[in-house]
Length: 478
Image (cartoon, rainbow, N blue to C red; front, top):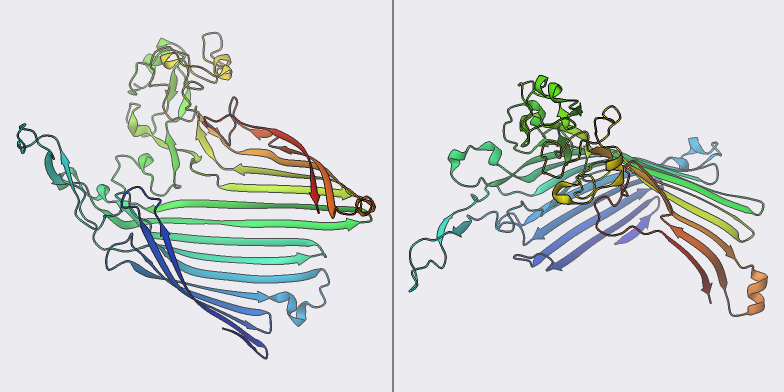
């Protein structure tokens, strides 16, 4: 339904969606249904209110909880149409907006489709059920306890932003957002001791907060025969685990609740052992191999007098995805001859140099990066060494997640560069059947700035070769 009544405008839609997918391996058929009602109201073409109510159903969820309502509401105000803004000639358009909604999903716990039913497993040999005195099924035993308190994972989302066009060509947009995901399915093994006797159930106890902002600028201008444009955008995202039914830890440095999702953990490296006297004077390192001069020395984080698994601590940022994405582009054209370039980068992104045959080299006689060999610890290079001594034998002390192997995975790439020439209309008119023609040379991923040697930070640990391409071509429109 759509209509206008004087200063009022109304639009409303009732919609039904059906989705089918068989991409899952076990009990793979997925059916989803959505019944949505959307309403938009506008007043004086400057005040707007939107409401969406979506009732979603999924066969992945337990009986009695297959359907859930997801409501969202948003509002906007176009300030540039107000009388008090008319004298601001440098403001062409200005709008404020905000939205809030609760989205419910059918994301399942790791246990799979039948999380709401008691599971059973079979294992080993038991009673002789067949003529060969063998068991066809083995012993049947209780698996994970069925989940009770069935619910949906929820995401409460809030967003506020501004859109503007200023100075006759500068487009600007800014958004700030906050999201709380709750009722996330997590294992409750941390709630129980081994006295439970079976695997603990999954329950919707997890809570994760995330927040951030996005901003973009784009400017277009023509001065005489020269046209140019420049623009950029940046996104910042941060997450924090508020609740996950984590098991009690002996020391606070081991607790992951309160940190980022996919927060890296490891040991704090404080240098290399200089000699045997240094080893004897240091706290024992119980990490699976006997330390020798040139091995990594670690900090006793929990101050219990030994270095072991209880000295793990949060290091770096998240390893799952960057917290900052950004890109900027620029271009100029003069009488058909032009150039465009687009740069792309990420920030606040951590990784561990743990590639076997690269950084973890010579173990089992594998390969080794030249940078590791050149900057390894030796008695002659002890003060300047960046990597521990090399060994052809397994050395678990040195190949632990630690700040020594931690590196910054942020990078900046020249993603695209193009130089082109658009044939003038006078030439096209002589040909007669061409509407447009462009000759160009285009480069892709021509260079990268990053913080890691021997690898590309974007494709770190990838088994595929990196590519850099330069293409020349002609684009014709008839």
